Length: 517
Image (cartoon, rainbow, N blue to C red):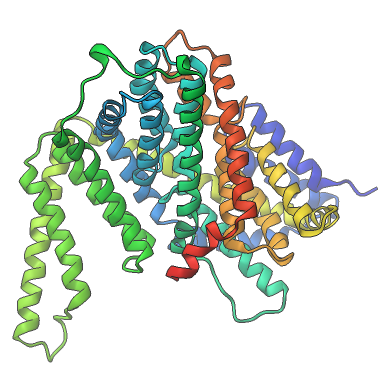
């Protein structure tokens, strides 16, 4: 009798994760064990593992994934330097006089932090430590306050630049290529990070709008759950305070996203811009000379402009006086920018946050790459055991054709979000189901954004939603776990509404990529 080793492999993986073993070790250990079992039973060809070295090399040289540690660094710098905290406090005071104003400010700040950091844990913890106590002091309903904080923090998964979107770009681009090969096409199209960011931009704004509408309606129908700030809690910020807190993150967002969507920079180059910009912002926030920090930012922007308008190749034999002058200007701008960055790094070191910034960046990056790397081994074994054919058969056997297959996959992703992180779902499940869905006729860009919004719920769904744990660790003692769970339920329903809107209006995801690219 042939054992369904592919099914047993998946069951063993879920069991190992539920027992609390680290995901990367579970993926590789379970895969190695079932490779041996499959070899001994004649169900697996060990020669397939020869492709693992090529997969590892491809991962470490992947131009798309190189951007991940830089975007992580950008987010960690903004969090550790308390720039995010200052933004949250200022926005809370700005909207405080409105009924539900604090909730509105938390959602808006969550969107801004998502576009400038993309780090869910840092955003949830920051808002849990700053905004949640303020809302509780002003008699906000505890469940509503917890739901707003948890949900706003997860916006970093759908609003670009996002680590999830970068990983999805790599996974879905490979799936799209597989689908084209399977259809007999030899002129292969790919999906770029710029396309993915552009596709997610409008749906992200729609999702934020859905949250804001809910908070406004809820505070209007039930005034006692979200009252306006009063007394000493409300100190109206000055225009200078608003400009100081809001403009730098907005400029950073424009620089990063604008350079990618405008085709000026690759994702890794744009991520470098974001990381350097965040370091300069941190230097100014920590007390370094604003003149130097602004001068450094302006010098880098000027350098980019000069290099784009009049690129100089000083090594050429026909270089004239004008090229040498432009080269000298570029060298001067590099020196100014380098000095500014050095001063900012020196300030972060003196304030003893440079070490935590680097360690946090390395931990998050190592976790992501370890999961992707070991998932490659797991998928090789799973495919070798016949799992890919079984998945394809199950999807095609779903009633309702391509829509029925997509509904099944979306439900499967939603359920897996109860137990797995978005990285595991992206690199384990999607390579197996995405090619079949694309072959069945679903647009890969639209499909990617639809899955991204669905994956976002993995941070919210009890009992293992990561945002719930982040808030549990940062929330005051009077907040119970039950109140946190109760608070996110309406927002999970709003997520489903967001998915439905995108389902019936696919142009929300496809219009911008087609217009720009």
